[in-house]
Length: 159
Length: 429
Ligand SMILES: Cc1cc2nc3c(=O)[nH]c(=O)nc-3n(C[C@H](O)[C@H](O)[C@H](O)COP(=O)(O)O)c2cc1C
Ligand code: SF4
Ligand code: FES
Image (cartoon, rainbow over all chains, first blue to last red; front, side, top):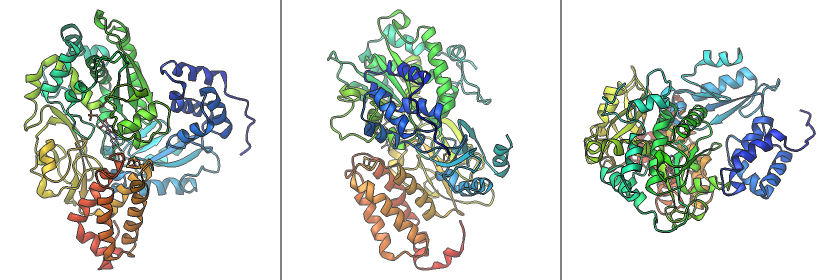
């Protein structure tokens, strides 16, 4: 994938981050929110974005990196247009999450954690998504899919 | 729905169509009356006392007395105090706080405002799990409504009490639910737990006194204030007071979530609500309160869901969310799945947890692959002690050991079959 030239954070990003800063006595406190805002626009956090953000928040890039790498939902590598998280925690595991992930990966011809060749989908594991009464569960971007079976999975790709 | 369904205060606004209660819906069933009582009739100390007398205990897992916790906050000093709602629900098998926030967001908001009043905190945070997008939207909407109607912000209900609520969303990490890790997360630091003491009640967020309460705990508060202590106490059937959300997941007929009195026998939840096991499956055991509680067996079905009673049976009430193990799922593999979760989510700060969990996984994988030795079971038992209470900075590691130690006790044959009689290797889960 060709790397676009980084020209700093956008006005929109900075504005949203500044709005968050108002809620806390200390700029560093918006670290997670700020990472999420940048990720919303850019899909992932590149080194360039990380450094620019650290500067905006007045913290060392290493401190922000320590925060960024801590979280499952902050991507430090490029991801596809749609990220599919499948729950692999206990109830979903009992009710077939391994088959769910195998089916997803086979369909997309990828290994877990990879992005499909057309750049459309990335499949990642997730911990319990808080819908265990409807296991197995998927989260496609922001949307929960419950009681997942092969048909539901195929439905994702027909959208 | 009117105010009639008073044995189910927490879920009385919850509708089968999963739509959420707006401010008008919430008010029509007594909403914000508890806040009115607190602010217009009671002193902060009196609110603490009411909640203490009601007997409310924390629903986040540890069961600490809520009123008692509030009363330990230093109130005389002029410093800022903070109130935090722990909405980071990530304990595998647990799906109760999500439902409360998605379907009746004002209940949490009212509880949080009353709690902030009780400890005189001018700022309250809701630390919401990043994956809970629907809850986020509904809480944002409800916060606007509450501000607009004067329940939130400055001069609440024309009093001189002011509080602002800030919705903070996380980015997916179990340890953020541990209250001192949450403080670091809110301060923008890497979310490792803090050494205690000092306790957050004295030195918490930015070094100021801070109370952290679970979402479900806070949802109880408005009702205690509105309907009174005596009424609240009447809701429990055993030694503990109030109602509680109980859930069941796994191979039962009707997995789900219900508000029931504390002290209800587990059998009643399992049979009458979850409808027993699905055809072709038998009950082998269950975790009574989320992933970090000890297994119990079918013989424990008559134990009541009460903090002391479940402890006496050898486990914990925890989050009150049962995970059912059926006879066609291998308990050793189930424990491996649980330990993989804990190992992945360990923050890596203390050695026993950082090294002990990967070691546990290696041993379990070897056993399952037919490469286990008898001594491995002793090593696993040793690990359950090494990672047990008192040896680590937080309760993640001891929690991780609960399902393992009880599986070694109750499902020893399953472990041994992999080691001694390798026939099991040919079977699939
Ligand atoms: C690893 C770990 C994760 C936790 N996760 C949560 C959580 O997601 N939600 C929660 O309310 N409490 C969680 N707790 C418990 C909190 O530390 C704390 O006890 C609780 O929020 C206090 O609220 P309560 O007294 O109202 O129960 C967790 C504890 C540990 C050790
Ligand atoms: S017990 Fe585990 S999760 Fe808790 S502080 Fe230690 S390393 Fe971190
Ligand atoms: S275990 Fe998958 S949603 Fe809870």
